[in-house]
Image (tube, rainbow, N blue to C red; front, side, top):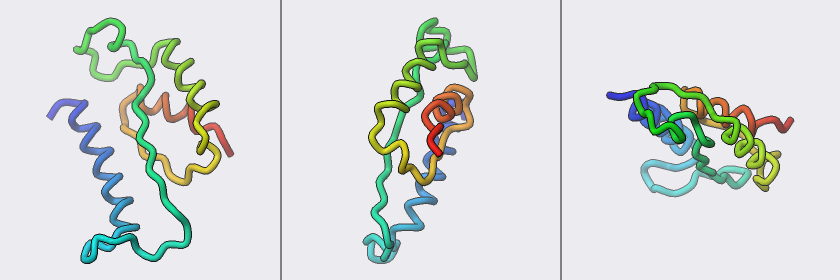
Length: 105
């Protein structure tokens, strides 16, 4: 399994774990929970291999534009201050994006 496939599988695993806490698997209905849950899926910002097209890089960093994009997302995402859980890939570009958008107390 390549790094990207492993990263996707890792992220999906944790999303499914989260969903299993709010969905009754027998009835396929939401469990009685006291607050509404929303899931927002965000892709990482621009990374080095997006620009260079050199996909042999296994764990590239964000570009300066990528850091700028992630910062703008933090400023424009309407639910940023109300996020309870963040699940991210272990890849550098995903962690960097997450760090930029999770600066709210």
